[in-house]
Each structure stands twice: as C-alpha cells, then as structure tokens.
Length: 79
Image (tube, rainbow, N blue to C red; front, side, top):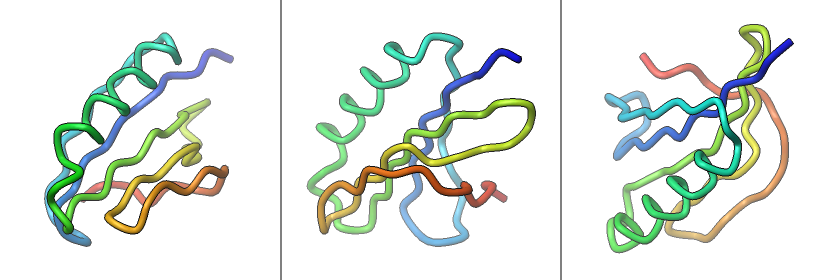
C-alpha cells in the first residue's frame, strides 16, 4: 500500500484548511518546513505533516506557536 503525505495549514480550530499532497515524503517535509517559516509569526497558525496510508491518516509533526510536537497519532480531518 502506497502512502501519500499531506501538509495542512489552519488558522483556527475547525476553520478552513489549506492542504498540499505529495507522494514523496521528503517533498512534503520540505513544504512543511517552508510553511512553518512563512507562518510562524501568526500565533493562530497550526501546521501539520500527515501521512495517509489506505485512507488512515496519522500526524507525524505539528507546529503551533508553542513549538513543534513530533509523534504519530490520528489526524482530525479538515472540514
């Protein structure tokens, strides 16, 4: 089963999200790093690096104004 890699940016809980999707993990990681650099001054920004495998999503990294959290847990789907 092949995985896709997402980067999700939101500015408020439950609000709209901007997402990008890549088949190469390194490309998604680069975009995550870029988005953190661009949006780190906004205290409401939440940026997630997510792996999607067979429709199951898990968060690999999350950045907020409190810093970065690294770990794997189920991702909340954007609405």
